[in-house]
Length: 170
Image (cartoon, rainbow, N blue to C red; front, side, top):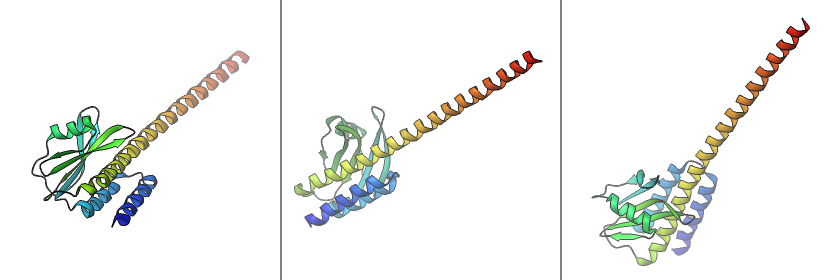
């Protein structure tokens, strides 16, 4: 059982390294987490800015999810158990990028918590990869616009200089 769980984590790590679209990966993470914890409901929230959260994927329906608990989990960077809900921070390079929330009908085996945390961290890596990819695309577009602006400026300058030389010669 432990080998199967670790194999699932390895497969997920490989998928994260090869995929730029995080939504299917996050859905896969929730599927694998269901196999481990048999949750009733699950959701992942991405941290936008300092304190804004966006729900990215969800499964099942929650009784209620407190924004306060989500932000508390992010600020503490440690898992939080609140009744039947488990809050796991999504950690990348020692900073939280989101929260995973699981709502269970029964207590999760303590031995499963580190594995769930590992899956949560993989989700954080997926968020971070997507953010970095978007940032790289924006930089490439900006660089291309700058290059075109320089080319346009140079070609206009050359044309004007040619006209001035032609006028002087005439």
